Length: 357
Image 1: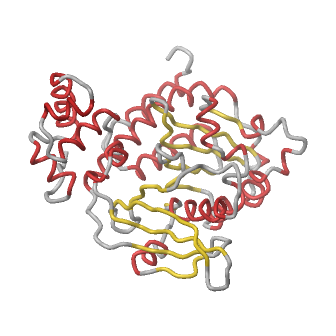
Image 2 (image 1 turned 60 degrees about the horizontal axis):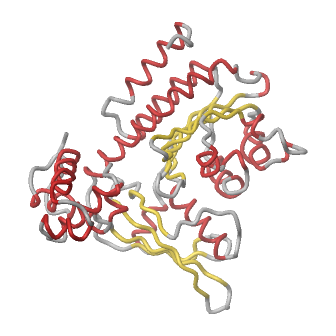
Image 3 (image 1 turned 90 degrees about the vertical axis):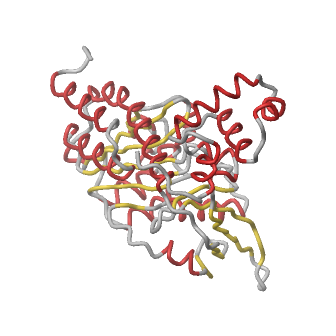
């Protein structure tokens, strides 16, 4: 804390406290964005949630950005600009980045898609990004933007932002778990058919509801981004995230769905992309259980418990001792606030209400 002045120290403690309150993801992203906007003198901010499994953006809250900025970001910027490449930032261990510095190695930085289609069309010129990571995974990216007349950001804010990143990441992770456990279980399968450019040709009721959600300040960008990625991959584009599926909450009901994509062909012999949306229950696989804050081993044990295996059978299957399995069970029960196998099964398979705490 010694490296912060009084104002920065107060801001750090305030934002850190926010991350330990029981705010939902949207509330936390908004509160942190607004606090940093005031502190740094930004003209706009955008706070995006990231799926830690795929590093795809799933939703965003913003102030100062018009609605059309979302489609421009998806169509022209993500997967195309280094300044919007969260997987690369995570791999490089970056947390705080000034966009001008990040793109300074290019011959013509202002020709980069990030400037051409994201900043300049909406009156902005300067921006810094904060990648919020914890335990090697990314949970959010926060961007603060300024107009040219406001000048570049003061570098003295960077240590403060760097120190805040893991706290914001942990807050988002905990909020995601709370929302996941409180969400209803979906019952209907959704389907979309896209043309080679990613435009929707056909959608059933579930998909239509998903597409018709009024975003307002909250952009549920997971589906359109996943659709754009699938369309580009189907056409052989390189440099994309290798994500055959993504788990997303329905923006209307909150029910968790797993979205798959596959390539097909229409009667006109042109390529088509089919996206299936299948209701997901947490007992369906270890990757879904990991969304609830379970470690990979805890997820393995939880799945085995749901399959009805005895402790000795689980130990044999996972090549661990029975004492170790018992320890994992205690951790699982504590994290999910249950006290027995039956409560665990009821919670994860959807036959009982989740805990309210």
